[in-house]
Image 1: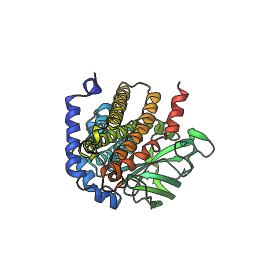
Image 2: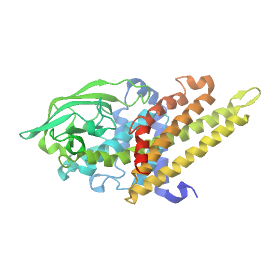
Image 3: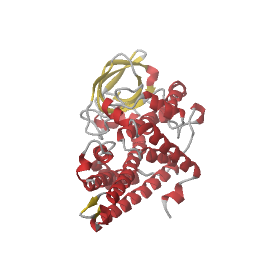
Image 4: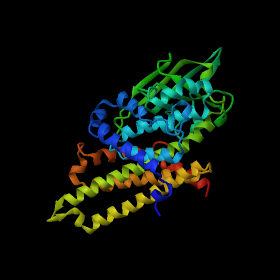
Length: 382
């Protein structure tokens, strides 16, 4: 019995079809231009908000659908069937990596002020945790914030921030207790675009995810109102750790979705491409290799749905999600390498989707917790 029959409902199928139609009409024909300009147009994101894609798990009171983690996974996987990874990650950072900080820790006033706009796509979000010297090692964050009258003053820098150039809201991690080392001195803040002292240092040029805007941010005596503290003071580390599970399942969905798409493209290509008087698919080595990668991808997909089910049940699943993130993202790179190889010289051309998928997949083993970090999380729990 497959993951489809166990976990997927008619509503899930309808959502998957809706996303597929949107991608086929609004993304694939035009997104090459987005790769050149370096970001997804705001009108596209607003349309997704209008269609209800930005509030799947969020409360109905603010315009969301109040669905569960399985529904969110269906959306993330469907979105990742696009051949433009930069488009997918732009959306998933907004829905699964940044805005959950607001929903999980925001006060009623903060939710009322920001969440309806987030769900509509009027306010695009970014999460600013990573620094030049602090990535997966969140405890090493140096950006600091101190209370000055009725405002918090932030100083420091952030690196590799997805949506960082064009975001409207940033959820920023900073050290609020200089006398305490490690995890017990971090807090989260809501910082609005245009706040004096917040500066986009530079837009970063990447190997892949070209239509995703990525920035280095600088906070220079950046003053935010005292009530822009998100959640409890000095409890930010736990908020970040909690949201890592959602983020890593979303990145695994990207890995699985991209792998399925790459295998489909390659299967079509090798059945049409002739070499030495026969289709490439007639070569045993090629068809068996693709069959094995299909099996591995389906196995990863089943495990991914199981992890999302564990989340819906409220079960502890750090070990399982860490396994999933490591295995699925490493697999995506294996799939892309092989699929590009089977495209031959054409697979090395920028005009082909497989070349783009190859570049976009590489970062999946790096971002959101590198494979080595994930394996350490698993090893701790063996």
